[in-house]
Length: 93
Image (cartoon, rainbow, N blue to C red; front, side):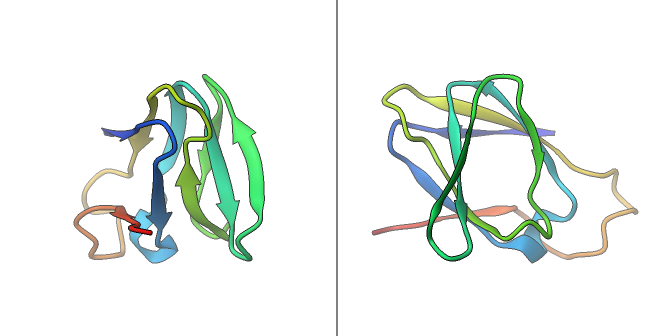
């Protein structure tokens, strides 16, 4: 388990193959899902849980000014089928 920290306005790309069945829970702030076509998706608040693999989400964005935190839970070692070492890549724009 690890924590993704998104400062106000921050955005991180989601590469579906690298999330390896991870499950996220918003523990602070709000997180907006950016859909595959670039359209804004739902905004998730505190205690909202979500899967990303296979959903077509291409990025997570913090739409607010305050820092948002997402706890990421991944399967135990040995059950993961992909080789990623870290599930997100920062996007520079």
